[in-house]
Image 1 (cartoon, rainbow, N blue to C red):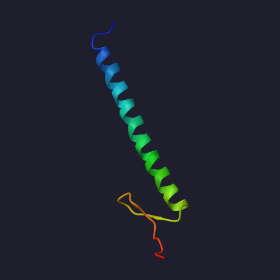
Image 2 (tube, one colour):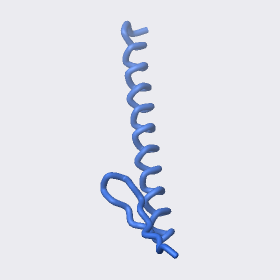
Image 3 (cartoon, rainbow, N blue to C red):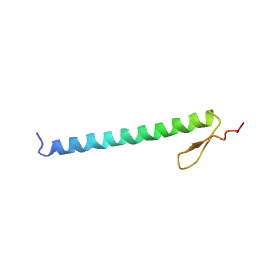
Image 4 (cartoon, one colour):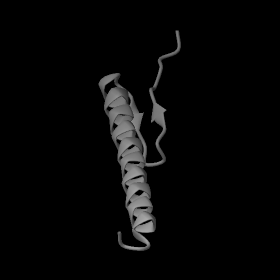
Length: 56
């Protein structure tokens, strides 16, 4: 066995977990923007969805 291989393996695992988390957050953000636009709202760069509602 190569000494220190466990540290390399753990580093790779943590990097892959971090990348999967980041990709999941971005995918969720894209889905939220699409849902907002489909509902007739507008999506600003800060991540807020606003839908202008007509008052009765």
